[in-house]
Length: 218
Ligand code: AP5
Image 1 (cartoon, rainbow, N blue to C red):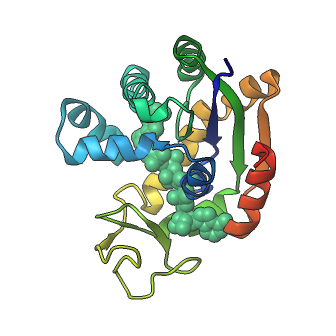
Image 2: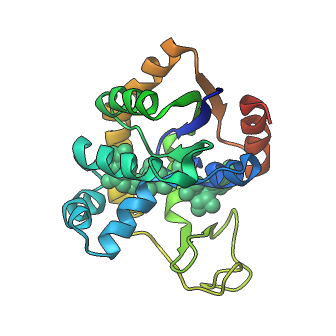
């Protein structure tokens, strides 16, 4: 039997991983998993994972690998994922990548492509300081590039829009350094597998999505 396909979105903070994953998942009719969203939800719910994760998220640092791996394993083991899934924000360290490879094997998935979206730091700062997210449905906007019709209100569900606590200049710079030091080595890891697709993220959302769709063959 053919294994179900998995697509990973990688790239620096604010490169558009979440935006593109949210477009791709419905097109492929599979769930979208965002490790950042799951960790923020755990913080909101004050769960045990949330208690551990909070200070890391606020500081822009990575939560310990064990925590990230456990959260990812729980999410991808759900039956909704049995036909495959799209994941963003995981893996983020070499250790996570090696364990993820093993997990996918164990669960019978095929890692099809790693879509690596790249943008420079100046663009990251513009994108993240202008990002607003909906408290209710999680829709993501940008004050300049994708503004809501009504200030502070979600077009999709009428929920309140808020700015993420880690989207300040100071924390964004930490997140970028963490990405450069701990996550960018993954690019070479996935290059060696022949599954890495480089995507220039400094274009309109729709232009980037055209390339993403081409890369996944849909
Ligand atoms: P996470 O939530 O994953 O943050 P991130 O990687 O920094 O990525 P972002 O969500 O900020 O950006 P994105 O690339 O999804 O961009 P988006 O599409 O929103 O992780 C947060 C924290 O959780 C981490 O710091 C860490 O503490 C922890 N964590 C998560 N995963 C972990 C792991 N595996 N291990 C350990 N810790 C982990 O777009 C950004 C903005 O730009 C939006 O406003 C959007 O509208 C706009 N935009 C998007 N595309 C375009 C475009 N093409 N043109 C113009 N604007 C655009």
